[in-house]
Amino acid sequence: NQKPTPHVALLPSSGMGHLTPFLRFAGSLAEQNVRVTIITTHPTISLAESQALSHFFSTFPQITPKQLHLLPINDASVNSEDPFYLKYEAIRRSSHFLTPLLSSFSPPLSALVTDMSLASTVIPVTKSLSLPNYILFTSSAKMLTLFVSSHTIIGSKPPNDSDETEEFIRIPGMQPIPKSWIPPPLLSNKPNLLKTHIIENGKMLIQSDGILINTFQNIEHESLAALNDGKVVNGLPKVTPIGPFAPCDFERNKSIAWLDDQPVGSVLYASFGSRTAISREQIRELGDGLVRSGISFLWVVKEKKVDREDELELGEVFGDGFLERVKGKGLVVKNWVRQEEVMGHKAIGGFLSHCGWNSLTEAVWHGVPVLAWPQHGDQKMNAFVVERIGLGMWVEDWGWGGGEKVVRSGKIGEKVREIMGNELLREQAGKVKEEARRAVGDGGSSKKGLIELIEIWNK
Ligand code: BUP
Image (cartoon, rainbow, N blue to C red; front, side, top):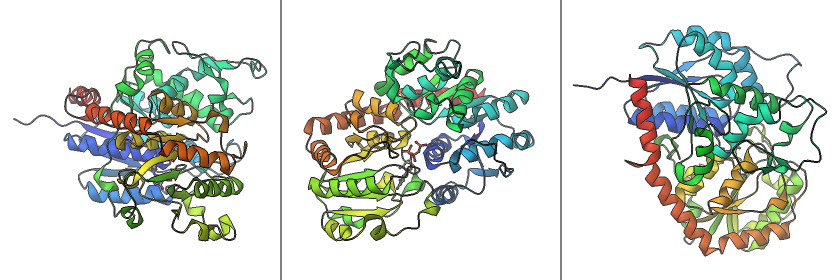
């Protein structure tokens, strides 16, 4: 007497920070015998995305890929040069291709799960097809409180009413937050795609059938309660925490041999995510700081937002002599490592992170203390969570990245030593790891959320 199997399609948007949680989620649905189709768009912006997709589909032959055709963007009316935002825009402009695509699935779909950056594009289409549409929010619940309320607290203000003297932003039902935590483009009066994306998609979430989020009750109880009690936005559909998404089989690869020779917990891993370019001056200060800290390190260096464009040699990025000084102290890698694999390595004892939410959930999963250095977007909201749950430290004074100010090597070295020597943080990170694993284990809060969801899709 076999249970019926729901058929769910997933529609991720561009960038590894969005694709990775979708692929992990797809893997966990497949484990629960849900039939899954993933809607992809080609070409991907980064090489990392195309490699992840190809590993994924060869690991999960039972998951079907379907391609959404995209119209090219070739006019100057788009207020962004960020290729990842331009891709969201391309999907928006091609949304009319979604109706025939979604109607063509066999067996018919029980639901579509859409990335938050595509909510305003896709919800009208699924409404016209009477297809349930769930939004997967790939950042923290703290960020979700800002995302769903921005259109009322920021977007509704006339352009000149910027409340310049006000230092805090008041999200209903939440403690006021410093204005300095809000991504600057969201507060800007100049039109820009980040602002449009947050305001338009955030406004639309109320019309979805549910919001799924890669977090769990123990670490974000307050934000989740405020969202689900209707305090942030009245009438918001249920927000179901189903994380942290566990690393998935397709991500396994050979590990970095250098790490195998390092003592347990002795290495700091430094990375600023898949789409953050750091200025050359800051890269050099950071390099100097890492060497001066006296702590061994593994550092992924990126000078360009898109990996395909990062052609410079490390020697050129650092200038004379640096790579010689690093020898025996650390390993500098250009562009990409299998982060999941690195974070799970016993040699790793700390993580200098830009606070992309996936990176943080990986730190949580492996119990690695974080030195938070948010660079843009949602990352200060996420850094707040790091400190609040005792997973790490955030030096707020370092500000945003992107050339706002250059943090000098002495300060970096000092904080790196501090995080690596902090036994209390290490213990607390270990506790958060245990809670995370309980949440997604049998009977855990996130696992229950997932099972309930599948039951709804089965009806
Ligand atoms: Br860099 C890098 N290897 O070398 P985030 C990243 N990753 O596996 P982002 C690697 O990409 P958004 C590398 O493990 C994480 O799953 C990493 O996502 C992986 O940050 C993902 O941490 C990066 O959310 O995306 O890339 O800035 O802006 O969407 O948060």
